[in-house]
Amino acid sequence: MTIKPGALRFNTDSMKLEIFRGSANYEGSASMAGIGTLAAGQWEEIQATSPDVQTGGTRGILMGGRTPTTVDEIDYINIATTGNATDFGNLLATAGRGFANGQTASRVRGLAMGGNPSSLLPDVQSITIASTGNATEHADILTVGRRLCAGASSSTRALVAGGLNPSVHNIIDATDIASLGNAIDFGDTTLATFYRAGLSSSTRGVFTVAYDSSSTTTTNAIEFVTISTQGNAADFGDLTQATMGMGAGGNSTRGIFYGGGLTAPSFPNTDVISYITIGTLGNAIDFGDATQSVEYAAVASSPTRLVAMGGSVDPAFVNTMAYVQIPTIGNAIDFGDLSGSARQRGAGVSNGHGGL
Image (cartoon, rainbow, N blue to C red; front, side, top):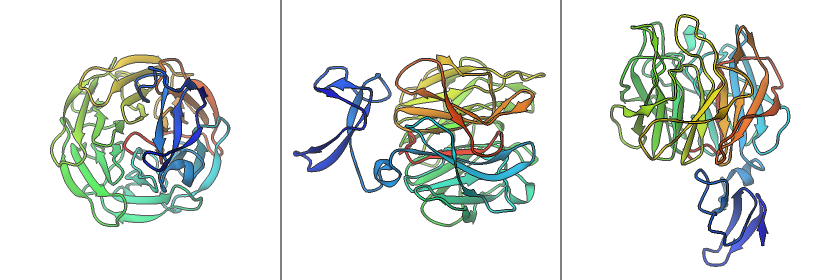
């Protein structure tokens, strides 16, 4: 029997409703080994907080950005359905989120952490992903306010690593996504750098090291932490090329790095997409090509699809979106357009990313 993505069944053993994720397949096929390793699929339990229940599928959200001035616009998409983004609401009026980090969300709440302007760098705002409306103040929680940092999260804990303000930092902060309160010092990155990108599984946060201003070099290093355990980052492996300003996201097993800028002094954009297996230390592998050479794109992901939103294609900002199917190596495909300004460096979150 052919099983189509999104099909539902009631599991009489577990007494739970389940949904089929991935590509169309035949029940009982040996290729149904799981999402992230094969272009196949698997049955997943539907919980009360599942994106299929809350938002009719995984919702991707872009918060703020730079146009080149900071903007407070929030857009959203249904990651499974190509098309243009829809207006969600606005960040707090005084707090455009240029240079903010993303990939910090639970099934319920998305966070925009740090960013511009300088007076609001420690600030964190939150949205309820299943609704629409304006962001609210989560807390002034970062131990050191900064921008151009990277985020990663599990379903309960958000991390923000590195960044700039005006000094370059190697600090990793951690905060409880569900509760208001100040961040705690989690540990340190291997180098003090900025223009980082981050992604996660439920247990591991992965960060690119990116731009080292002390030596004016862009690095190819990748590092990781165990989200549940405070401590310093350790070496993971290397990117396929030295890159900064990448988009990053993925599912629970596969992490994807999208585009970015290359080495000084001109920092040309790249269209390279690469991937890692999050649970296995090692170097990134070529995945395919982006639709254009782009840096500073925000990313949102579901278990099967990653969408890159906005960014800059020198010298212009863009309002386009593109996607890849995470389990299947290949080139990106056009998704649609943002509803508002062409912009870069916003915070991309979803209620179906790999950390959940």
